[in-house]
Image 1 (tube, helix red, strand yellow):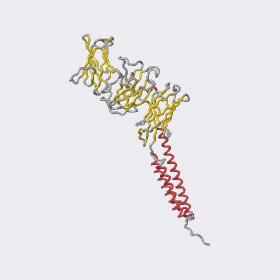
Image 2: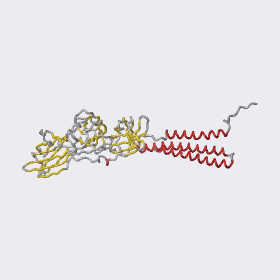
Image 3: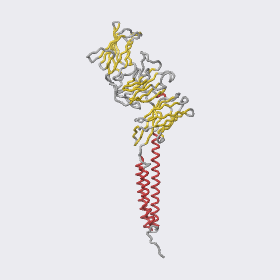
Image 4: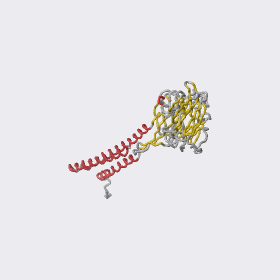
Length: 456
């Protein structure tokens, strides 16, 4: 009877040799997928929530920053629409959404149905893919709120003579080249000195109503009111402005010398903004936006940005309507309020200024003098550690898969080699042991490479 010719494909020895050659290739395919797929070092996203106190408030204002981390380097990312959910125990829940700007930030307002008490559980998710950017519990620390150093309105200087001379920056600081008030108050003993001649001289600022002169020094003399006050309108031309003040009355005199607190690069707030229902700002340095925070000693009322346009010779300017719900009496008992303006969303630049705004009675009384006080946001929740942990878990799973694949391949190679040596005696077994050890070493080396490439 005719038997078909055999090409050896059904020979067990041939099958073993085929598997012996195929197993390493299959293992390398699995390892390659793990290394360049789920186990590859990839950027990952997270978010941080910044804001102010939370205890006892029903409305919270937060600034969200979305970050992308790659090899321990963080950069902001415009991720698009994000959703924010916050829950205060079992009492109430608030939700909001916002669209990140080019700098990866956005501002949200969360309205709770009851006053917040105790920790808040918050979650930030990307609306595109539902990825969790930040989630956890926190409580706003009121003790740290508004503790950034500011500028007291009362200026330090060298005084001499027969009278007491007090000098105040009406809003605590000046911003070149914009005008603000400098208030000089003169006392004779405990009584205000009326009808005293008060002269201010400076060579680094312009003064309202000062007579024109070719002299680089500008001077102006005013007469004190019944409260012993005079107010000079001062527009600094540079960042170091020295002023000399002389007072003469009743045949006596006094003098004061000091330096005005001019903040380089400060964004200037129009002092009539509140009364006019707007926030109007100017900046001497070209910028696209100004970052704004409205705050009181007990709350962060609002945060956002003001787009700036270069349509003013003094520098780019912009304005927005005063945010709803932040004007007295909308916010309850009137408190002093500060408008913090900054060129960066974290309010860390040297030019960050907290301009004072009195909400008790508007327009502001001409004698109102307030300290400058910046309110920088507190970090309430940092989602980056959890995001990094999730990324580590992803790479760990890839390494585990690679280890299983390499271990299984090495074991199968060893079994096949041992099977081939079974019928060839002791000498074949010795060479087989050497081959198995070599295979194990090779797969171990591949495992080390996988760990190295997937660790980050």
